[in-house]
Image (cartoon, rainbow, N blue to C red; front, side):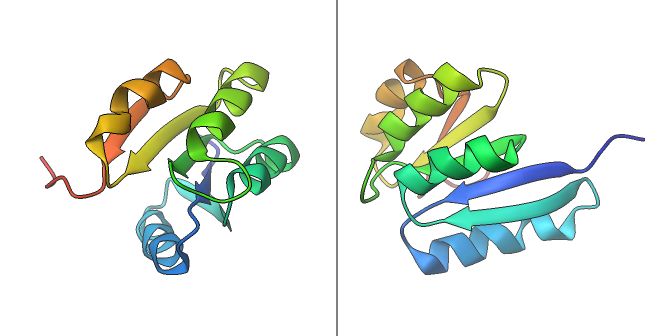
Length: 110
């Protein structure tokens, strides 16, 4: 049996964090889900908790999500980072920063 997946959610919007936290909590594959409100906290918690997946917003205070992604991937390349933004134009920058995937917040599931 696999160990449960640990997820870190980084978004400066409390409502977005709570919504994202509710989704994986319904899966038996997901163990702990953590949340932070800025990029600096995301890097610190990534170090402390070693999550399997980080869901990273782009626009955040202290350290934006692109820079936080680059720091996380430089230190822990095996950690999966999925960058999310309302602005699809950040896709290339996110992938260049080392993100494993990019999701535009307004996209329909498909």
